[in-house]
Length: 208
Image 1 (cartoon, one colour):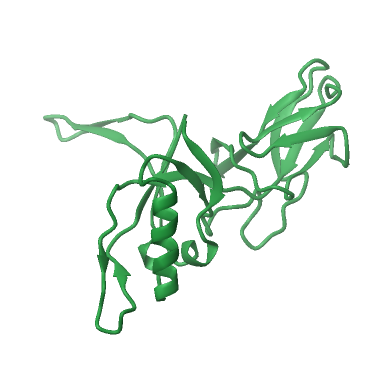
Image 2: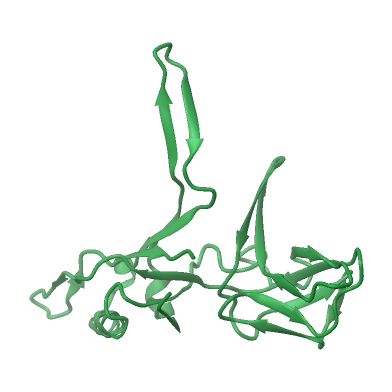
């Protein structure tokens, strides 16, 4: 998948709107009852960055970023300001935030995940774009300052020595969402003050 490891400008994404989308099939029966089936096992996020464009310089930055990505051709990183940490938005990531696996004495690689829970229901999201310098790791609750590495392009943590059998592997981190433009055309409006605006800048999460 063609992808550029660069983040969309933070000052513009901060004012954007969007969030997770799911795909559910609903069949209404003749009795008035209904059957529901999930077409997607995982959610997919959509955003509109146009709401973050406030100045002419913002507009120029978006156009430059769009051209450098060749429209929809190349994916890129996006910060979802409502959900970009392993902890609550107001908190600081800690090494015990998210359970990413259990040691078996042989496995050395573990994928970053974030778990969403409500009541008895949980959903685990694979995190593929952690932010460099933000990842912290613990084995059995003990923070590991060495002996591991993180691939910030995939979210895969690799230990030099496999964690012992039964040890809980946990991690804390900040992360980006891999997205692409969902259009090959930017509809720019030039107003009287020459500030300019864009009606819509649709983005969609890319999944492998």
